[in-house]
Image: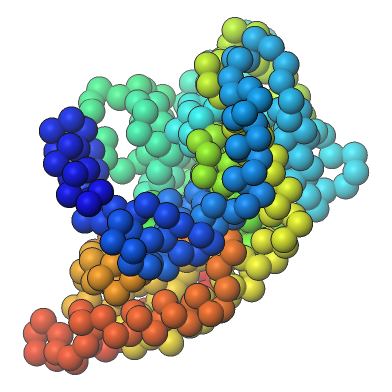
Length: 430
């Protein structure tokens, strides 16, 4: 069987950077995955928010197969089909809700979210250095948010203000300073103290790896005002939250009412094919010149074919609207479970906080046995990132199976019944 052979081979030849679940998936369609024994699973992880169209969507399979038969890769030294169309479509999506005279967005294509964020960091530093060359102050600092996650390369890890992830990899690149999420007073104090030295601020509009914690509209509005006042770039990391993951609007920043200077994205943009992108608005998009940044594989023939059909299919099938509606149903359904104390998020980017005595990791393991692919971001937090084709029937199956898992039945660890442990139940759009 695939599972046994892969476990043996990987134990000897693959670096152990992941504690894999003991299942080998070999097939998939839509919301469903199948293992090497033919067992069916309902997927509420979607490759960590990647498989936006569902597994093996016919349009994506056809586009990838057709492109692979023609031309796979030639590098960024040359023009290819689809790259301009994808960048144009992204510009239109990023300007959704703006007037017709809004500046266009220029995009750099990479292979992952970490690479997209590295690009944004370099762009902010170049912008800050240009400011100092024009007679202004040196501006090397980039503001980040505590609990955020921006990648595992050294610079993106330095921007990830989580000491537990950083401590083994010191020294990290300098020039990053963090502040608490949604604390306007602390943000104002930081900019008052360091504003002249700040070249950019990186925020996840919804902190995904931290447990699906949205920024407040008031906090983002103040971040926008403060960065504008000191000629620093506001960078929205939409690697996980973008491309209709959070609902009707293409990007979470649009839901929260701000317009950033730079937006990074990855995950769902290729429907499952590796692709990242860093888009910059107006004059910021012209800061880079030839040789300032680059990628061998970024924006390849295969990647652009996949991105174009993914974006087209999202629009054609109304997946933003579906994410909004199915997400509301998912949040309200989870909030009714007796062992869930809080639900938060937007669209199909959702977290459920569990009652005292219910371990999220145990639910993930037991869920797999019950045919559910689940994810936890902490000991008491389940995160749900299903494909954007998720329907009410899928949610109903999820909730029914969750309620039957052994970990939420019977006695709690201290002899008491599993029950609510406080918190705000049903607060679906915090």
